[in-house]
Length: 624
Image (cartoon, rainbow, N blue to C red; front, side):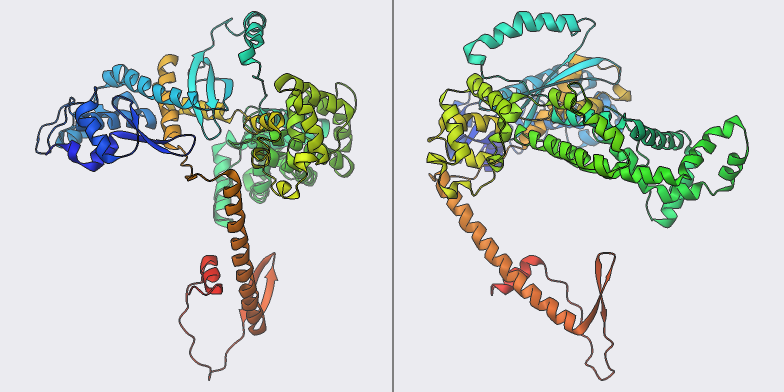
């Protein structure tokens, strides 16, 4: 019997996907035809109608070759294991691995085939799938960024972000003069201006990366007078130990003996998001070990001598023994921690521009409060000055655009936020550029909560997407722009992820790879993972958005009731424990000290595992 009679084989010959309305469809992997997921029709198509159907070997066949369907599947798995795993093309050249594969009648591809025709084959094959996904996407974001690869070649990457995933698209080498200042300005003037002037491209807008902006803000703060001195001292401590493995080994030995683990001293890099704060925090966490290091005989001897060879050790020991340094470091960490936390939030893959303005306003408020409380008062006041070209105002003006202001006020959480006249003019300009005139009236009604925005139940949700989806028919102009802004990516995380894939693909072992070949390898490395992570939408079964919202509300109320029952029974258990035990609190942790039982007490029962929250909830509702 041929393999095509096997249902599992037939299903593997098709790719399952979902349409925009949630219906299941399958696509033939051979010819690309789409159809309903019916196993009988799928088998008939493979037997009689598929023009590209391969010859299928019988199950009793003992010798396989590359022309058979099973061997083609094996070939694809062997090739994709190399491409998606970042393995060298010569991985199958080892005698042991070739012997293992031949034992199972599988002939592995050669290094030349992997690096040329097979790479081109699967690159073109997956490019068709990716282009189909991009073509069917309504809201599309393009991310562009540049970096330097392992061989110091400057490259620029382009990625596409959809509402659910990101796809790597291409990688190009930047040659001398190709992207210089004059060439870029000339290209924008001659090409881009006429391109965007067309009616079909008038909706396109540009947004800078919020994570990069926050990183530059961190750079500005660390370049201020006293703050710069503290950061410089911490960086010198890290640099000394990273360049002195012997002394670093002593630090690790002490940490392993006293704390049970090793804490790494992290070096900062201006292009690495968050490394400045992590570097300062790594010094703070290693403070005990660093102070103990200064008490070693070698350091004490170096501090008393005037030898140039031990001058670096003596200087680092002086910094570590300074109590003022640790006080300033603690104050600096308290200042930078909320900014670092917001930067982490901005790095989320689904971060949109609805929350960008809110983050920057919070940072300005934090810096203003810190300017009155921290020892860095003079530096922060100078940075927050109202001068046109002062530090924060200049950074804020470069990072925030009129679209960010519009997104901030279109967030239902900020409907009551004060709106100054200059900002109102900026928002009106956004409406005039990217939507119709009706948006002005709809925005006024939205701010006043009148007309279609009056019902109170519509304001229960704080999710901007759910909120504006309710006004698809009653406020079409404003809701369309708001939903576009919800789906607008606020960072270049997809480009940073592509850079990591580039470094994983073109490492020191394969530094001679050309950019064109790296482009294909990174394309397969990233997009195979993106295609495999296709979300499965729940079937709507003809239900409207209001029906689904009502069902979610009912489910939330049921979960709240179960949680209340669980808390009630949990409180009863705590009261019983408190009546029989002495409860002691140590540093925020609760421990119980059991009372001693008399000898006549009954033998203690065997310990039962502590029930989980789900078990307690089931017990409270009578499901035990």
